[in-house]
Image (cartoon, rainbow, N blue to C red):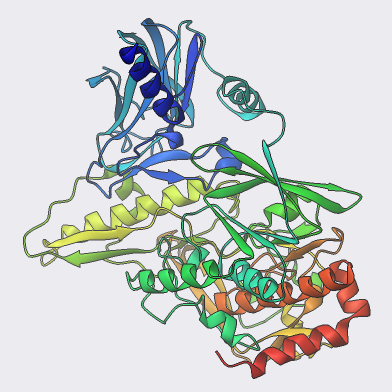
Length: 594
């Protein structure tokens, strides 16, 4: 009896860590109990269907990821893993890995087939119902695994799209709707500087706030994971922004960790802000142009929550909440004639005759260090194919990639991978030069630092003309002095330049102002937006896209939400009916010392 009790207790204890199955088992890689030194990448869920694990070892194989699975029976199973060769060509694929079952490596090497696909590894024999799985990185160069599938029958899983999504839901027995519903006064999606500022401002006015963020730390581009220092002025919100901004360390510096700790601590201290770390919004449903709820999923365990509120803020950067809800938005460079934003000095590089899909690109920052001993680095022909002759031992903001035929959201993984190849190839080239033998890679981000993608449309579209004319609006809530700073890829001027380096065009100016009417949606009546997805033209984004400025937007939105809450109105009514009180609230922030 005692042995029976002990067996029952052990099984109960293991329940949260085991995956149950009948004739098959689908194991999401991001749900592994011990991820080793593989990292969870949720950046491209909307494109490829899931978060996944990636072996980001900068050329050194990482520690194995491992988990346990409880099968219904012993015996033979067919084995697949969903993965991709992320740099296909006439060379050994960089992202190869193996799977071990109960400590025994399978013969198949994964990661050799281009595009996301289920690679079939043949049959495996398991001699116990409870098995262990391990992901074994072979290269250190960004092997990736979305999921593992074990089945008694040899039927290939769907390759992608809606069919795969439905198949995945069925295999995981996912309910039709999230299991949990939570209700707040304000739901903010995106925990960058804008989202954090909005949460603090609203919380200080007594609102119950949900802050949904798909990473384990707050800050977005300013986080210790991406490491861009904050630029811009504080405007009327210095006290709030000093809680969450950064010092002016070099981009990519590990000093970002100090500001990370400050930021998370300062947002966490508000009891009426519920921070949902590692939750990624995947849907927003609107009825009659009013958002009813936002659904989010945990990036590792797959659990889901439905968030309800009378007010929502899109601080995702990519405008996802507005996009799902049906908000009007723009993408790309407008024709010079649409808003009259010409600057003859730079012509087409500034504002084109015909609209196109060029936007300011994304960056990945990276750092090296000099060791005491000579450091080796693998041969990387798949990376040199992108870097060509370019040599570098460090990266900066101008490591940026944009192309007219690539969408910064839809093609985000390709853009990120192109930048990784540029980094590894340029570093390899530099290592061949005398004097660089002791250099080694210290840190390479795997997260895209984005500048521009969707821009949601509000009652006012902020343009270059508002800068040139120094327009002071009755609802000016953001003020900035930073130059309008628009980027283009260097190879557009000279094809000999690498395609992953950019150049900046600066238009020097004095104060300019952004109105509150650029911070709520024109057609979704309960949606605010703060950050780089605010209502502006491509050129209009050039100056205000930096993070203290977007933080000003967030704080302004948070205080506007408090007015909405007080009078039970929607964002437009703050401008139409309560502007004096709202502007008084904004102005009062200047008298509160940080």
